[in-house]
Amino acid sequence: MKDRLFDALAASRADYTQILLEEIDYTRFGFRGRDMEDAASGKLTRGMVRACFRGGWCECVFNAVDDLPRAVAEASAGARLIGRDKTMLADAVPPETRFHPAAFQEDFRGVPLDRKIAIARACNEEMLAGDHIESTETWYSESFRRVHFASSRGVWWEQEIPRQRLAMIALARQGNQVQRGVETITGMTDFSVFRDRTDLARQAAGRAAALLQAPRCESCRTTAILDPKLAGVFIHEAFGHLSEADFMYENPRLNDLMKIGRQVGCPELNVYDDGTIPGLSGSIPVDDEGTPAGRTMLITNGVLTGHLHSLETAAKMGERPTGNARCENASRTPQVRMTNTGIANGSATPDELFAGVDDGVYVCSSYGGETMLENFTFIAGYAYRIRNGRIGELLRDVTLMGNVFETLHAIDGIANDAGCDNIFNGICGKGGQSVPVTASSPHLRIRDVLIGG
Image 1 (cartoon, rainbow, N blue to C red):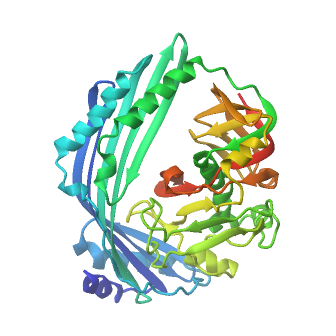
Image 2 (image 1 turned 180 degrees about the vertical axis):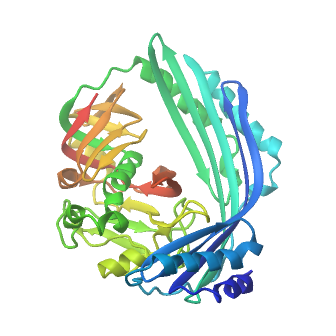
Image 3 (image 1 turned 90 degrees about the vertical axis):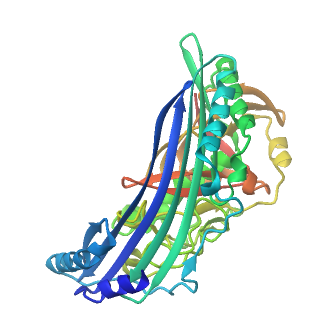
């Protein structure tokens, strides 16, 4: 395959050309209530040639390796029609390792389909057996991608990318009120983490039922402690996207907000993006432009110290590429995207954070939210009242709102409990594409934050 890619690239008449090609096997199925609602599997080959000439880009999608010469010719010819300025692409160190195989502990491809269906069905039935549960959704998906990359700069690599996900959603009803409990499992190389997970299904159903009896959270400004999952989603959504340089370099206001050296948070705050952490959903040895993944410190001791870049944004902003050009699949345009983004451990224990709160709210998990530049709104999965340093009654319908920079300055406690047991493995959407990411954090304590009910 390597020779075929470079033979095709040799005919390009553009300043820069790259080929991204993938071969993918996938399976998915799901239950809604007691019935299996959807099932699909397949194999496909797809890819894209991207060519740049005098700053103008042209892309050509193809679906067979035999189409490579035509796709390269069309992409380079189109770029020559568009280009009017100057090609600006930063230099990047090529990857040292050219082939990245999947290191399986238990390969899901060797597990019979009926066993996977039985696992999902057992979780679904466990939720349906819960009190007040009206309906459920249980979805399983898996894919195995073999990705090939080559560029006119002589960069080449291949990697194997396995992915699995099991999502469990329980919907509870009492009168006109409906509540939900959600649990998900994600994995890459070890199918054993999906076996016998009715415990999580039971938690989802139990939380949905308990929320029916919980009081609504009143709107107020108060001290909030964020659990690691919500804190991770907060730093990913409210701050991490602002660090993606394709949002930044053509937006003067955002450029000013995200100026290197600006004090953006409390002195104990350290935020990173790191695509090299083994086993996490957002980990990528090489990005989709051939730049090795790395660790970028976005905030160091409260000071903004880094941005996330592609080859083009790094050149236009005079910075280095960070290995953050990612695409949903090989037929989509790479965008600047986060990988594994998180807040580093602080010096306090979680108990010390709670001990410092006489009256507040412990906000947990996340059902998503909205951001607009520096302003955010997040919907929590659930919450608890904090009284005299202790966790009290369950609360429902809780939102967290504010300005991200004001909120980062209002952090007055960062715990030391970040770890792989309490991370958010999920999918992040941007520009019509979704990529796997991980968001992580220790517990955070934030003073005078706006909580909505």
